[in-house]
Image 1 (cartoon, helix red, strand yellow):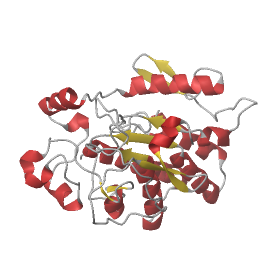
Image 2 (tube, rainbow, N blue to C red; image 1 turned 90 degrees about the vertical axis):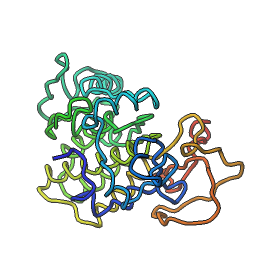
Image 3 (tube, rainbow, N blue to C red; image 1 turned 90 degrees about the horizontal axis):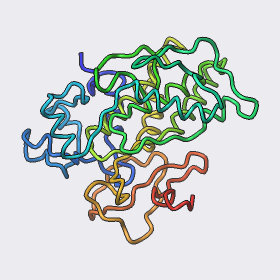
Image 4 (cartoon, one colour; image 1 turned 60 degrees about the vertical axis):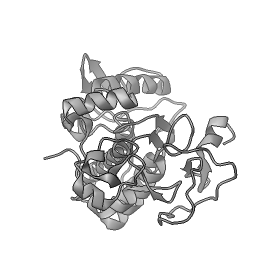
Length: 305
């Protein structure tokens, strides 16, 4: 069975939402010519749609043909990082935050031993601060630093307790420090709101979004032995779509775009309707969950937010 499925739970009920682009109010685009042989409507500037997904094979990098992997690496400078490297780098960030080593696990070469027991926090920090601390994975690909459902280079599926992604760590903390399902839901959402990533290629971005959604479902099952319903999935998917967006990291716009010259219109939380009209390439927008407004990514880079 493939690591990525768009036709089964939990992805199928929210696949249209997972395909949307909050900046353009359309769908994300392919931004790769890897699927052009399927048909003329699969060119790199074309939108991804549910109908097109039926006709193509959406596969994580580890399941793609070796030659296809090499071509994508050469043409788009893709780098796929094994989980042990992601773990090492995430551990370094946590060592800085906690002020000590081996908080979540102890590294053992290209593997690790998970820390047993409840994570202890330093006197000047608490668990809510950790959950709310914002992290971003630039050019995120399939988001291996954020979530670690599987090793991006081997395809090995990791048990929930052994995962090392940033969101995995935050959800572990939420699970250890909440006593009711209502409280868990609140802080699991805040954990999702605190992690960000952008990606150029549309298929990679969709896989990243699917990995985050599946990760949330995995932790809900592990903690409460239940599957989130359609309404909960839509709420979580909406957070993911805002926080993981398609962008050219150099221009700050969607791929192949030119920055807009005028101030864009602020979009609302659930504004996912695909609209027609004149083609534009505005600066990408993300969501500030505390002020509850969409903001330009370039404003964050300039330090004005």
